[in-house]
Image 1 (cartoon, rainbow, N blue to C red):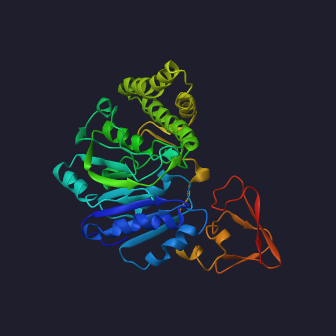
Image 2: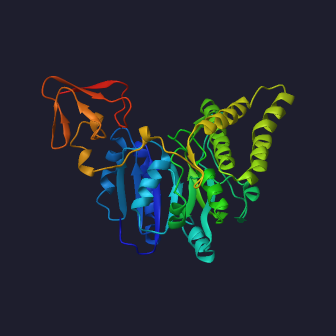
Image 3: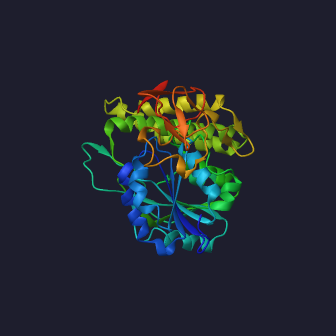
Length: 374
């Protein structure tokens, strides 16, 4: 990573985003005078994102890494372990950052050394509400949060947040099984918030920092998103209580009553059966969290080794390789018929079959095997 200058960096975790991530990068580059670097950690199953980023890879401001893990938490932790900057500002790969994105955070971190996590506004881009929605969060006002009970009605989301890297990594970083791609699907930001609070750190919110979110979801996708969200929320509360933080019990009850049960009841009063996904997600999250191994000291789930991975060396993927195998340079890839030449898969006859061990991590998007035309 770059030599530490201002101690502030931006970080994006992406997967199969393709050219649309360019919008996010360009908006951040407008503010690069306020940053050491922009780090992009990529979990894509193909080369589309890499190809879109090729024009930026010679830019000294941008650091890019490809990882073989699955799950946003694992990717973020791999990137953070390689970074030098102490303040890291995170956004998603479908946002456009606003002019005040960085300064609102750095001002607050400078003022309060015990603050390790800050959330900002996530505003919606233009969309048709009859077709779906965009996840958003507006802080409304500045808040300083020091207890789990204070956190109960604040909903900051990871599409716009900033961390103080060293204390967050001392807590174990992001839970590897929370969030997209993890066993618990969602709640990666909420989970980090509560772990920071129980460790005695301060969390803040501010409407001064903002991003525009373009992550449109259809109403059908919204039902799955709702179930996943409450699955993750319930799992987070369950493991926290299992770890001995019993003061979280009222927070868990409040979460269920106000955000899962109450909307269902209100809809039933109107003659509508809507909101069952939240109830189902909450129940499944509790059940799954009770069965999953966790570390009571860190209040983190044990990582699923089948989806863990490492940083992939740059020569192991890219335009020199067939796109289907751009991410397949992995020690667990077995060549059944063919060979490896300079680290790249190469066929020795008309068609080569590459079999992948079903119980080992790999980024090849297959079930049993794939065919590579020579």
